[in-house]
Amino acid sequence: MRAAFLSTDLPFAPWAAALKRHFPELDLRCWPDVGDRAAVEAALVWAPPPGALAALPGLRLIHVLGAGVDHVLADPDRPAGVPLVRLVDPAMTAAMGEYVQFQALRLHLQDLTYREQQGARAWRAQPQVIARQRRIGILGLGVLGSEAALRLEVLGFDVAGWSRRGRRVRGISCHHGADGLAAIAARSEILVCLLPLTPETENILDAALFAAMPRGAAIVNCGRGAHLAEADLLAALDSGQLSAAVLDVFRDEPLPPAHPFWRHPRVVVTPHVAAATNPDTAAPIVAAALRRFAEGKRVANLVVPARGY
Ligand code: NDP
Ligand code: OXD
Picture: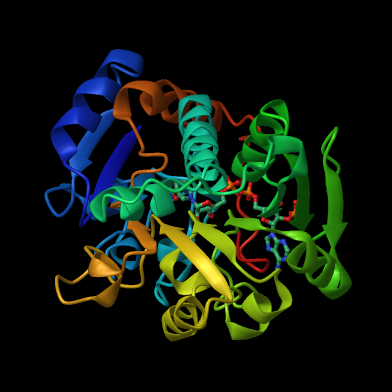
């Protein structure tokens, strides 16, 4: 099978080496040096160069080298009938779980406030809240959101989640629909976004949602930058409606040096690292999917383009 690696972002060499170990007979080439374009059957993509997918007339499968597929669906020239598979890697799921646990504990234990107090040499105890008194909401109860919810529940937090179709997760109070979102917002002192970016979820973290949350609540955005209405967040932090935000994803990545988030005392910035794709753990998964496809077997984790994820 000939496959093309298409990414404006990821380096080719580590993927080529890892895939060689798990699928030695795969003829993997890096765009644009793919030889006869009509001979390319599979594309391995992350932020593919615009128009590249449309230039591969023999394409039969697109495998995204990450969990989110918004960057591929946004390509107006994507060959619409070609099946699209996304990456579900247990190592990434675990990494996201750890990130959310860490950031939730940071907010729960008022780390930002104590850092500020340390800067001012202020010895001042804040009221202590224990985990089971802390209400956390998770937007998105898919592979990553449900793992994050379960890990927060293990830490003792009072966790609720929200999904499109009303998914059930053991031990988590699950909601869906507009009423469900209102219920989650009203109860969440910490609200974690692990949604895919779709037309329905864009700007979901906005002034209306913040106003519906308890005063002094905090958000953690690990979904996509376009989930967040940035000006609304800054206004909510200024007014005290929100007390903090942990942001891993941004509309513009890298976050421009002049962006106010960098120096805001109540904003934590991490550079899109909550769950990084790792060729060493992902290559066996991608190789297995390509083999199954080559053998005419059903491939898991197919994206439903009409639904956007
Ligand atoms: P999944 O597809 O497994 O889960 C998506 C979840 O979102 C599902 O529960 C789905 O509901 C819910 N959802 C989708 N649309 C809506 C909607 N309109 N209203 C309510 N709920 C909705 O995705 P993953 O968990 O694997 O990944 C989620 C996102 O995390 C990715 O799309 C990506 O943007 C981001 N990500 C970020 C990373 C980082 O490092 N920051 C790393 C990896 C991913 P239902 O269950 O009903 O279908
Ligand atoms: C992903 C990501 O979607 O890294 O995999 O954000």
